[in-house]
Length: 187
Image (cartoon, rainbow, N blue to C red; front, side):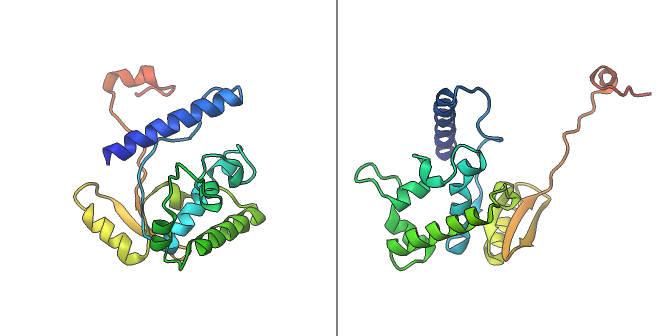
């Protein structure tokens, strides 16, 4: 898992540098750092891929995912002759489709459907969940992670289950120093 995190950090950093240089801008490119979410194969993975394909649309960098040179959408729809990253045949297998043409068609239509509705908003289901899928899959992930973090809950939304953690505000007792850190002094 450490290798994936380091790779994502490198990709995110380089992408941000290139975009900021090209657009003459500074600052953060993504809202938050990378973290992993377990996604059940099949339709849940397909929905997640569509959500990811629309990230640069959400960010305002492009109007369609095909315009982003490094997008998975672009590679799936127009596979390069060399230096492929995505194994379309393996992707077809984990999505449960008969052939790669079906993968291209279904993902293309799903992206277009979302663009047609204009609802490309960020969805907490995909950005804040520990796991997304069917109930059995999510319950298994919860069971596998039981000793790691208490407070994880399974929720259902739009026919999908997700494993979420309670958001907690950062709290620390600074004691006597609290008065200098806050506009409201302790009495």
